[in-house]
Amino acid sequence: MCRFINSIIGVTAVAGITGFVGSRSSGSSSTASVEGVWRVAQVAVTVPAPRTITPVQSNLAIITAKHYSRVEIHSDAARPNVIDANKATADELRQAWGPVVAEAGRYEASGGNTLTFRPVVSKNPEVMAPGTYFTFSYRIVGDTLWLTHQRDHRGPVANPPTIKLTRVE
Image 1 (cartoon, rainbow, N blue to C red):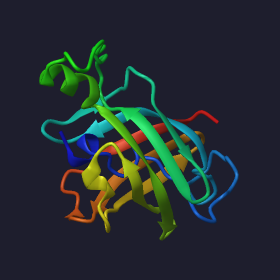
Image 2 (image 1 turned 90 degrees about the horizontal axis):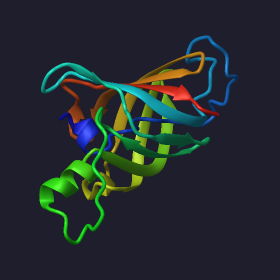
Image 3 (image 1 turned 180 degrees about the horizontal axis):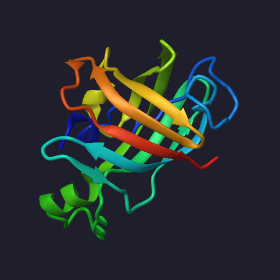
Image 4 (image 1 turned 60 degrees about the vertical axis):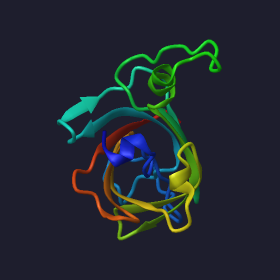
């Protein structure tokens, strides 16, 4: 699937904004805060074929003034239980753990609608390399946050996924 979903990218998405602790209004992203606790409601991808993933398993993103943490399951199907990882096949392990995105790090806001995530720890070791970052445009309406992956340390994202999150707290 796309780079975002297989690695982490950004947050499923999630972000908090330094100095951007506004009210939780139902207006635009310039007055609403991304700080809080969020759940991914949908992930719209364009490659390999356009589709919208509606997670069927729990996920959570926590955003503070300067840091974020997220654990997400990017799958629209239930994952199989792995009773004994030592006896599981490679395919069973991929099905169970492949859709899992786990990451935490810092972020900064710029330009009024851009968030840049800099992972510190991640399930994917590549994402923890020095200089790695993920930039998203964002929009907030009420208790809904949309993140669209724009670029990363490799350059612009050709087919950017869009993540829709809903505020939990």
